[in-house]
Image (cartoon, rainbow, N blue to C red; front, side):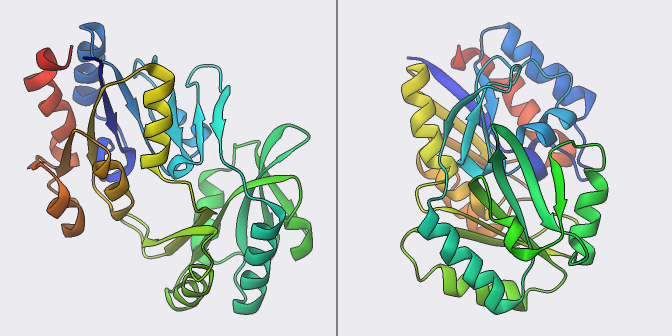
Length: 276
C-alpha cells in the first residue's frame, strides 16, 4: 500500500518565527531517504514556500494556494490548476467594490504568474505582506481598480487590519454556490485574511487529484488551522500539532507536539518505518 505524508507549513512544519528548524529538515530528509513519500499543502504560493523550505528533499508535487494549484517543486511546472471563470470574477469584483476592499489578485498574464494590487490602497497588513515579497518578481502594482481584473485569474486574497469589512464580504460571497472563502487571522500577526477561490478548491480536492496522479492508497496529514479540516477529512491518519485551533484538534486522530517542538519531525522519526 503506497502512502504519502502531507504537512501544512505555517504553524505546523514552520516554527513561530516561520522557519524550518535544522532538526526538522534533517528528520524529513532522513525519512525521505529511507523511502517515505513526503510533500506539503499550503495556502502559500510555490515561490513563497520554496524560499522557506530550502534544504528539504522534495520529490513529489506540492499543493499550493490552499489547493488551487498543484506544482512540481523543482521545475515549477503546473500539474493541476482550478481557475475562476468570468462570472465568478464579476461577482468578486462587485463585492470588493461594494465593501471597499482592495485585494491581491493572482493571475496568469501571457503565461506568467503575477500578483496584482492597486497602488495607494494598501492596508497596513498588505504593506507588511508586500514588504516581505519585495524581491518577488510576480508582484505587479496597478493604478486603477479595474486593472486588477485581467488575465487568467485563479485566486484572490484580501488583507485588512480589522475583521469587519472582510466578514461582510465573506458573508456576501458565500451566498454564491460558485465560490469558496476562508476568513482567518494571520498567524502571529494582527491582520485578517480573506481568501477567495473556486468552490471546488480545497486541500482535500487537491489531495484527491494527487492520489490519482501518484497512485496513492494512503494519506497521513498534519495541520494546525481551520483550513486543514478538509485535508483531515480525506486522510487515513491525521494529526494536529499542539498549537492547532480547537476545531482541528476535534477531528484529528491525535494531537502531537507543537510546531516549536518539531512535532511533525519527531512523529516521523518514530513512525517512518510503517510508512515505507
